[in-house]
Amino acid sequence: MKKIEAIIKPFKLDEVKEALNEIGIQGMTISEVKGYGRQKGHKEIYRGAEYVVDFIPKIKIEIVVEASVVKNVVETIKKAAVTGKIGDGKIFVLPVEDVLRVRTGETGKDAI
Amino acid sequence: MKIKKIIMTMFLTLLTVPFAYAGQEVLDTGDTAWIIVATALVMVMTPAGLALFYGGMSRYKNLLNTIAMTFVAYCLASVIWVIWGYALAFGPDKAGLIGGLDNLFLNGIGVDSLTGTIPTYVFLLFQMTFACITVALILGSIVDRMKFSSWIIFTILWVTFIYCPIAHWVWGGGWMGEMGALDFAGGNVVHINAGVAGLVLAIMLGKRIGYQREAMFPSSVALTALGAALLWFGWFGFNAGSALAADGIAASAFLVTNTSAAMGALGWMFAEWLYDKKPTLLGIASGVVAGLVSITPAAGFVNLKAALIIGLIAGLFGFFCVAVVKVRMGYDDSLDAFGVHGMCGIWGAIATGLFADPSITKGASGLFYGNPKQLWIQIISILATVAYTAVGTIIVVYVTKILTRGLRVDKDSEIQGLDNSIHGERGFEITF
Image (cartoon, rainbow over all chains, first blue to last red; front, side):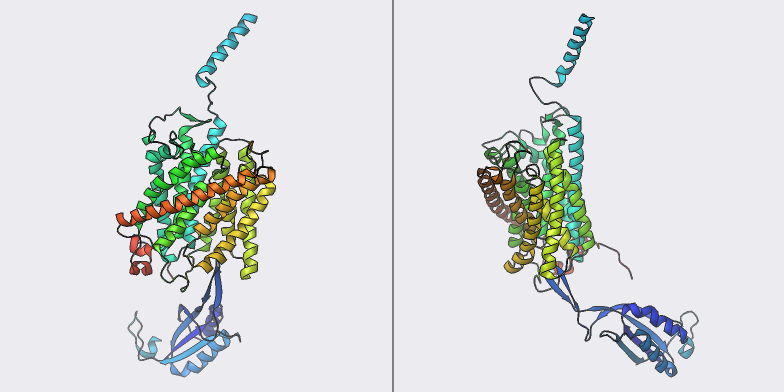
């Protein structure tokens, strides 16, 4: 089992969610995060006091899937989230030791 | 029939005797109704207008503290005023400097007492709201770092020893009014006074940790804009109410007040657009206040054309003081009580000496109407106010420091935020 962490632009969330639903991924966890890479921040001015805001709002999507579908899921997220401009984000793939479904107690692949 | 007519006339004449004798003023219900309303309008400027205006500009972690200081200042000044404040400011004059304590606890004033054509109770309540907002304005210079106990003691001392004397000098029969200084609704008494006091307190308290190095975002420009709109609304009571009558001068003050506010907003907006490439809502709201401050001393003395100029210059000058001068000089007048109220108040007092038009208030004419002497009188009154407030505030701050064992919160409290460290509260319950 693998965990996929995708950092994407917030306005792309709906598109990514729809695309994942279409390939059979029925659940995910999202969080609002801030970050920056090569995308520069923006300037805000309050009565002559100028501030550069480095951290840009992003959405992080986390899903746990079977290893066999990782490639397809990553490709789907990438296609839906891309705009071609700096700041599109990154996708990370991590190993997962175990998963448990709280309601039934199922573990392993059955719990995904 | 003729005898009946004579008796009727005599009877009707006798009826008026209890209400008008020896040439005294009579209660005018129109004036009274208006000034009661005006008092309520000025009241809303402090706990609502100013609280939101300043609160929105404070960092989120200090939003409630800023509002609390404003609220408590209003409450303290309200009580001080009706116990000894009114007596000091408007009591029988002593050497042109101060009233006495004859009217302590409003002694000697009753339901039938009149001041001009309105009940004395109404007059003193109207004046009270001015004392309240003047002291509240000062906190704009020192948000984010003052102990709550120190603010309370400061308020009590400052209203008593600084506000009341100056109010007496200008409006209570003291030397400035006698000299002929023109201050319709409080350019000196309120804005220059509070602005200079704010600067003094800001310098003595010291800069905020991280000032000009760290980003300090306003908690909500939306709240600030709402606050500015409430201030604008209330200011109609502030200026038009200072006519103390429901008459043509009040109407004229109403006209020039709105015009100056609008011009101030546009002036600041254009200056900011050129200088920083973006017109901000904070700038528009600030320009409104700059325009209102400047027209305050002039409201019942200048005509429409003057108001257009006064407002425009207020917007441009206000922006310059805040975005250029303050940044270069480096003092932490946090929310620009000095930059907007102090400096635009000075412009307004000078403008009054230039533009006062005798066709509006008889006997009040400025340089452009052939009376250059008025400008000198205005300058003297400005200098005297600045000097007395500066020195007086320094003394009040020292006494407060001793009484409350230090003015400033400790470093951890300041970094944590005063809403948490002083009040144990949060402004908004924001969940994901």
